[in-house]
Structure formats: structure tokens, C-alpha cells
Image (tube, rainbow, N blue to C red):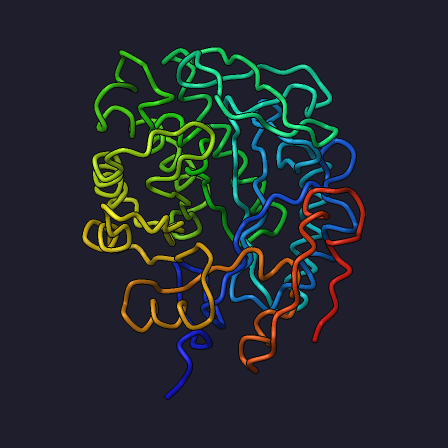
Length: 353
């Protein structure tokens, strides 16, 4: 019997040679002006044997940046830098999609290196601290509440980011709707206290996220657009109670878009079978993520609970993870002290087996 991890699968127009995806991971290695540099080109090239690479979170605009040394996709230089990354991955036979991440209120202004607005659905600061330029956790800025008439133009920024990614040769995009960032801030009642058509009920709170997905789908085709979400994730001050009340309406509202895939970070909730909820309310292919092993990933695919599985930390220390999993080779350990430090150490210096 063939190993389910190494069988092909199609997600929208993306034809994966195996079902092992590389999860998006912030690594803080971008160069000046948030441009992808030589290190980033090499980092992604090394890991191109994944059936699909999902990049680190990439800001769609200057206002979308919250962390130090994270890349953008809104300037010509950034587009050119990502084109080098895409070319390197494609030369190795891989496929790559870009995660579009707008931090919203999760911003330490010193991380930006420039003056820019801080925006959110409501004027509520993120209760969690975020590492500043020196790596020390710092208080986030108080955001400005967005006006309803600003939202169509904001959605258009995501569409432009998707077009820019495709102009760089990136195969598709993934909208980050998890971890307490802007899209999640609209979805979650802890961060969305609006009293207009974009707040209150779940049907209202999902309105802007669906608007953004529609704009991105219109820009590059829904079959090149994925969505990342994690019901019950408390990161950056999210309310974890009753996630199904929000995500079932979201899944139903997205169904007509016919997206390429849903990237689900399964929190292992005792009160909710997240993957069963997604399957019951969506026919979109699912990539499952969160602390998986080869065996648990196989079991999810065999049971029909996932179409593919993604690995994060394992890909950091094992650029040849696909080969190691196929051969049963032990995995190398990650250097946790070098996750977000500048330089090649702990980034591109992990050897193949």
C-alpha cells in the first residue's frame, strides 16, 4: 500500500507531488526595506521538496507590519525579491504560496522603522506584549478603529498584494485569519466591539473577512487562494469560547468562493472536533497543522480528516524533511535560540541527513 503522505493531491490549481506542506513561520530575516534577501532565497530553496511551501507572514502594506524584519509585498523591490525566492523554489521542482498577514493592532511601532497608522476593528489594544527590535517583549500601540467606509479600500490592498505575489511568480496566496491578527480581530468578539454592520453577530463579524477573500479571489482566481484559521486559539488576546458560533457561519459564507484550500491549525479542543466541524460545513480541501508527526499526519489523511498536513518546527531544522520522513531518518533538533535572530545561524545552516 502506498504511503498517503507521498501521494499526489490537487488543491485548486496547485498540483502537489506529496501531501507534506511547510507551515508559515515568522523568521525575521528580511533585509532593509523589508525586501527578501539572499538568505531567504536559500532558506526556501533548501525546503522546496515539500509538496507546498507556505511562506512566512508577509505584510500587504506598510500599515500591515507589526514585527521586526518581516517581508512585504507592496513595493517594487519586495516584488523583485520574492521573484528570486519563487524562481529558486521552482528550479528545485517545488511550489510556493505566500501567506498574507496584516497585523492590525499587533504592532510595536519601533519594529517598523517608519511612521504608519495602527488600525483595528475597534480601538482596543492587544493585551499581549510583542518582541521589539531588541527582542524584548513590549507593549503594543493603541489602534485606531477603522471606519466602515475604509473597509473596501483595505480589502483592495489585500487584492493588490495577491496580484503582486503572482507578479513575482508565487503560485498562490494564503490569507492569515488566525493568531489574533487583523482578519482574526474582525472575527473575534474580544477585539471586535463594533456596533455597525461589521460587528456584533457572527454574521456581521465575518463580513469583512469574506470581503477580503472575495477581493483576493477576484484578483487572482479563487483556485489560487487559501485561508489559515485556528478556532479556539487564544494568541494575541482572542476569546476562545464558542468558536463554532463564528466559524460555522464563516465556512458557510466562504463555500460559494470555492477556495483552493483551508489551512486549519487544530487546537485539539475538548469541546469541539474542529476538523469534523470544517468537513461538515465545507467541501474545500483541508491542510491540517499543529505539532504533527509522520504517523499522526498519515492517520489524518487515511481517515479523510485531512487532504494534506503541514509541519513547522520540523522544517526549520530539517530542510530535507520530506526525504527524512520517507526514509524514516531521525529528525535533527531545532536551535530555538536562533528562531528570530539575524544571520544564517539557525536559518540556512542546518545540513541534510
